[in-house]
Amino acid sequence: MELKMTKKKIIAVCVAFLFSFISFAQETPAPQQANEPEFDINKTIFSHIGDNHDWHMFDITRKDGSEHAISFPLPIILVNSNPFSIDAFMSSEFEHGHKPVTKGEHTYTMKDQIIYYADANGNATDQKPLDFSITKNVFTLLLVAIIMLLMFIGCARAYKRRPGQAPKGLQAWLEPVILFVKDDIVAPNLGKHTDKYLPYLLTLFFFIWITNMMGLIPFFPGGSNVTGNIAVTFTLAVMTLLITNFSGNKEYWRDIFAMPGLPWPLIPIMAIVEVIGILTKPFALMIRLFANITAGHIIVISLVSLIFIFQSLAVAPVSILFVLFMDVLELLVAALQAYIFTMLTSLFIGLAMPEGHHA
Image (cartoon, rainbow, N blue to C red; front, side, top):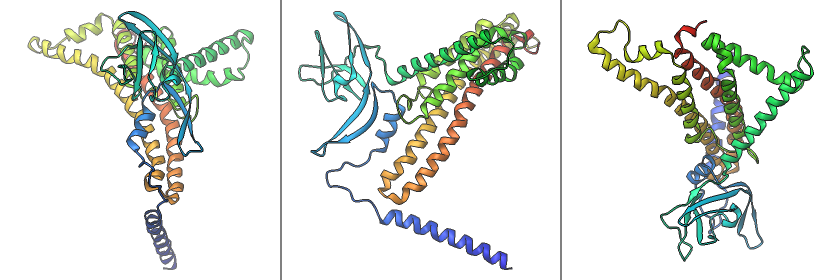
């Protein structure tokens, strides 16, 4: 009886604390200056998950009260067709979109991270040059490629220098992951064809994993949303589509266009269904990776934004705790999405080669 009463008292205290916390957060907003603009959560979220021409670090407040953004500029590379010319300069010349840039016969301006031709007054027109700029996502792609080259070349050299010896250092860290991908993901789906497709699938796994991890780093050179960019996941899905169908043998194509044992009136209908299935499989891969990574970034930014929305320090501890929890969860999601994409890709390739599927 006393134990039940004690539990009831604890629950009552927790509920009272929760309601008092909520009321305190609502009743004690931080003072806001008259000229201070309202916090725009939509702009904050989309500026984070979108691509940018510079790498924003932090803001500083000048003596006159104005804010100045400190950022790492990236190269702008623009191709013009009439007349043909190539203009290259750093994104800092735009001064975060507040200043047009003139190069030769062309004047450019940047609006919402998109570069347009500018008129005589410096205003954006409806025409755009071909943009081959090194954006934040492109920079991260190049950085991840360099990291992977250093990792795998270093690991290969270690095997040559120390043949037959126990791995150590980077080699000791990479070997279990490589064996896991080979023995637990690729081999069960590809059988005797494992070694043929292992280089691509290993590259795919490490690329997705490292880019996901880079996106969780809140400072330079992290914080980019590479796998949350639909163009990147689309490219990965197209590569899977091409490799799968070019690897297909005659049994695979026969089952698509003339399934054995199927009544002939149903063959055209089932062929259409199977062709649609060829496209929907990589489409599902593309959307799954894009949606999961983007959703994780949006949730984390939204939780941090609660502090500025409520304008109360009382919300900060709860917001920070939830952000830490989500960051730990995102570490799991980063590896899980790499595992799922690689596993399904190897499964689709294996299904395209029926005779070697369980060899």
